[in-house]
Image (tube, rainbow, N blue to C red; front, side, top):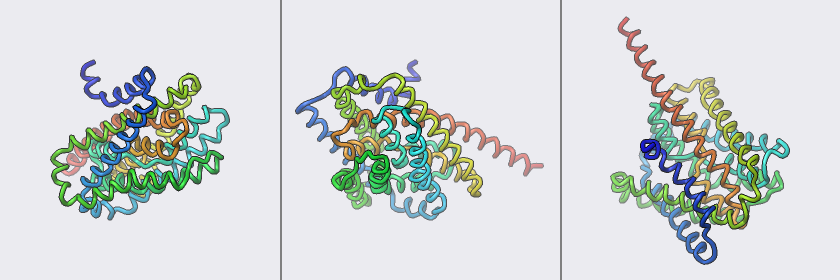
Length: 331
C-alpha cells in the first residue's frame, strides 16, 4: 500500500482536491483571493516552462516536420472530429459534461508525461520534446479558436475576444518572457527541476480545488447522476483507445520508424490538464467550470495509467528486438 501511495501520490492528490472541495468549498472573498493566487501560479508555471525550454532543442526537433504534422493533426483534427461524433449520440450525458468532452478534444498535448513515456519506451525523445512543446504553444491559439468554431456549431457559445486575451496574457506572455530570459535562467532551472515540478503540480491542484469549490457551491453533485459519471469514464476510455490505435497503426502505414511511432503515439494521444484547467477557467468563466473540467480530469488519469503500461511494453519489446538483431548478426 505504501509503495502504491508513493508512486501514485499525485493522482491521489488530484482526487483529494475534489473530496476537500466537496466537503470544504471556498467561497466569497477568500475564493477571490485564492483565484488571483491561482492565476499567478499558472503564469509562473508557463514562465518557468519558457525559461527551461532550450532553443537548440527546439531547432533540432523542428527538423522532423512530418512527425510534428502527424501529431498536430491528431491533436487538433482527429480528436475534435471524434468529439463531434460522440456529441452526435443523443442523451449520452449531461450538457456540461458533453461540453467538457468536446473541450478536452480541442486541448493541446501534455509536455512532461509525453516526453517521460517516450523516454521510458525508448522512442525519439528530442522529437517528443519539440512536438509536445509545439502542441502546447500552438494550443494557446488553436484551442480557443476551435472552441469558438465547434461550440458555435453546437450552439454552445463559450468563446470571446476577452477569453483569447486572457489566455494570451496569462499563458503565452509568461512563456515568451521565459524564453527571453532562458539564456540566463535555463541552466539554473535545469539543475533545479524540483521548482518547476512543485509549481506545475501545485498550480493544477489549486485550479482543481478552485473549480470544484465553485461547482460544489453551484450544486454539481446534485445535478450529476452516477449514470453521467459512468458515461464520462466510458467515453474517455473509448476516446483514448481510438486515438492510441490511430497514432500507432496509421503512423506505421505512413512509414515512420519504430522510435518515431512511439513518439507519435504518446504525444498524439495526450491531453494537457496543466493547460486545460486554466484555459477552462478563462474560456468558461461564469459557467459550470467544475463539471466541464471533470471529463478532462478523468481522461488525464486514464491516459497516465494506460500509457504507463504501454511504455513498459514498448521498452520490453524494444529489448527483444535488439536481442534478435544481435543474434542475426552473430549467425
